[in-house]
Length: 205
Image 1 (cartoon, rainbow, N blue to C red):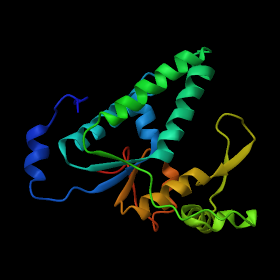
Image 2: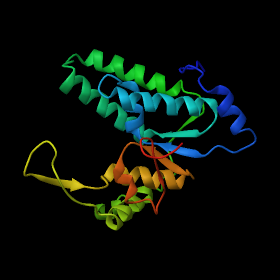
Image 3: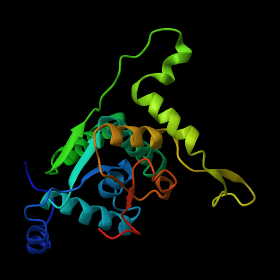
Image 4: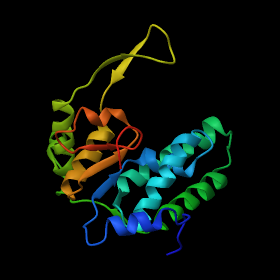
């Protein structure tokens, strides 16, 4: 596949990790969104680019889930419509296609679906006890988060903690044997007993 990144720090990366099994990192969709849409947070985009370059050099093995890909598509569409004012569905499709091609073009990234148990057909209330959804539901119950002040609306409060999709990412990352979750999201710190987060801003990597 075509390499998408300038080969930086090649000697340091290759010499340090010769003969070692690279850590298997589940990539939170926000890392890829900042890489794909760098104009909104150029600081985070540069960190994402350097991290993905390390993956291409073999320092890490990256994992992206199809669930994560769907989340990336949703966020890109929201950015196009709500921020960039793009209202032509053909333009959405073109941008999404380019984003997916870019992700598939990154070397040493594995696209996975994970292991899913057969979904029960009835009764419907048992749905959340099936496969990964059951695990995610348990994670949400164990790490309920807290309330926090809304930064955009003074005097209002919001939930501060894991979102349901975050819990699903954790469950999937565990199921496929990832060592950590690479992320910018501090909410994963609460559930570090499930799988440790690699905070690309705060942690050394």
